[in-house]
Length: 122
Image (spheres, rainbow, N blue to C red):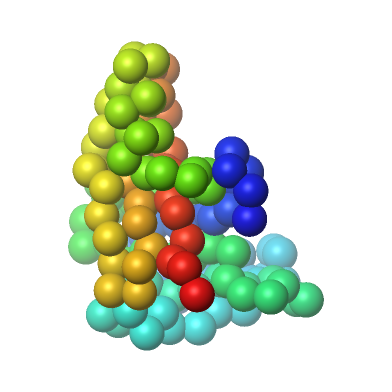
């Protein structure tokens, strides 16, 4: 995966089954429970992919529903700092998951939410 490419899409919803049905039917995606998601995340896969390319986050409140893209970066903390220098804002600081994935959610100067991540090392 290359720095600067969109590598993940995430949909957050209070109705994950409806979202899985909608996106599954629309794009022929299939879903599997994320073993690191505590039952609150489903991985999205498309035919022929070598792994998941997105996910469905289970939200508890419809005000948290969202659809965002996630961009691969070589250093999440550095990308967050650079975004802030350019007028963006960190919504969540860099977080490292149990499997080594590092991510952060940001807002651009126009108010659009997006994310950055570094995949876990194998």
